[in-house]
Image (cartoon, rainbow, N blue to C red; front, side, top):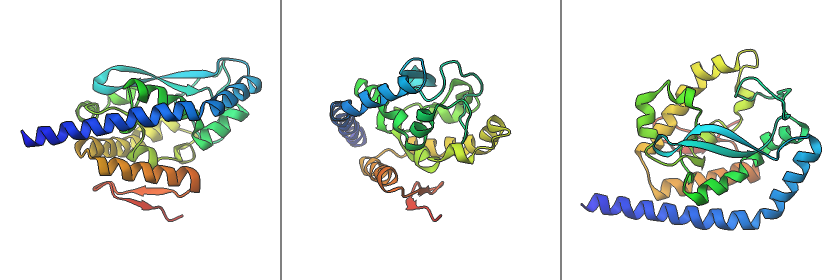
Length: 222
């Protein structure tokens, strides 16, 4: 009974932090949102936003909102590699800075995502690891988390000649392991450490290494 009470308090703190931070961010960053939206449509004809099909909390469909990075008529693999010809000039910058993810604060405010949590994955990739995702999907997907920090430069890691094969065989199993680790050891202090590491990565360009067994965060040596 005591454990359930502690767990409920942790969940309430997490949700309160999600609502407060996302609401403040959406208001404070609204001028930046407008500026990015304007640049996106000037640079390339088409919609401002793109919705990526993902699997969300408890297996619910999540149409994850992003600023559009690619030409409107772009087709091909869902994975984006460094120098991808489908990216617009603005899109390449958005991908590099991660600013294309900003609209997801809306999902956090609505309760579909959290500030910290497993990265939402595509249905096809989730289907490859049903047992692991049975655990991972018990918590809301996050804007940032172990996976997002460990693979912040995923586009430059992927093999441009076989991005899908490389992702499935090498990167995805590591991501699943990290996301399961997070979902199995929830905690407010852990979330705060991840948020601080994310801010350092974004503002100071400090790459972060994530221990695959413990989740310990350390500065990656170049």
